[in-house]
Length: 340
Ligand code: TXA
Ligand code: MG
Image (cartoon, rainbow, N blue to C red; front, top):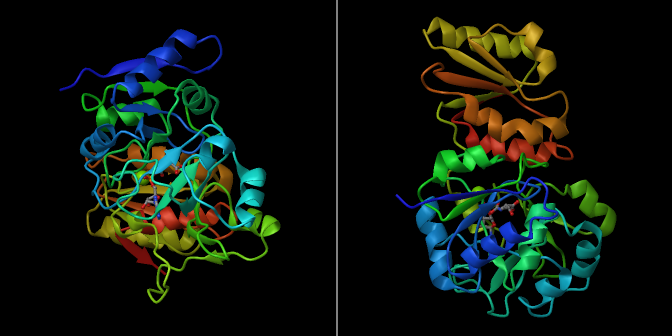
């Protein structure tokens, strides 16, 4: 067990001492979890291979899955990459700082294990005030995957990080609940037309308004010559209880719930709050009332189901538009069964 230090940085102002302590901890080659506007990240100095290696160990993350390098500004981003297509500037100027990660040609500044040996590097400028304050205090980029044990739902509170990583990392910065709740959009910017590799906080509809030409990576078409985000092949977001995703209305959900209950299974339901009065189950956890709230709450709700109380989670589906695309991407990965 490692001694995990905790810093509360709910408000980043007037917290210079704590920020310097956090920066010094990172500078010394240690791993620290911190809030971003999407999910909590597990950070280390991206130029220090041994420090980055500690991230992989703490998370149990496969070595061939590259990490995102976080920087404070566009100028800092430029220090990590080689020449990129002109549309990237338009994207950065429109969406960064914010929940979007650009896959760009690497200039080799980040350690080899950040990029998993690829010639590209993923770079993101987070907008969260605490993430910004930490990055501005450090003189190096911070490599950070989501701060969960590999395979688990991503953490949206410091308590989630503690659940997975307490005793395994040097510190946790508590900045309260994250906002967006879904990870950043990953966009491959290494060719003439950008490709969305992972849907996330910045929607394809938003990207279309800036660059008319953008390709959505289709997981089912393996003929594409471009590499997909290596992380997409691994199990993700799995709650402790198996999850069944059900296409259809409340009535259809109720049929599925009854079928499970007839098999003597205890059923937990994950759905919008307005469905509660139409559903009878052993447990009901409301996700919120609209897509934005569902995105914000999804991971924490997934973590609330326990195998002590529930044998199966039944979850409704959402329209694949705006942030709904990211929500459905995560739910389809979390699900052990999908009923059409
Ligand atoms: O919102 C986020 O993106 C959060 C916060 C902490 O910034 N981070 C995050 O990191 O979600 P992670 O490691 O959980 O997901 C990063 C994804 C992985 O699927 C990885 O394979 C992909 O980004 N990736 C990283 N570098 C890449 C590269 N050079 N080429 C293709 N995919 C890359
Ligand atoms: Mg992750």
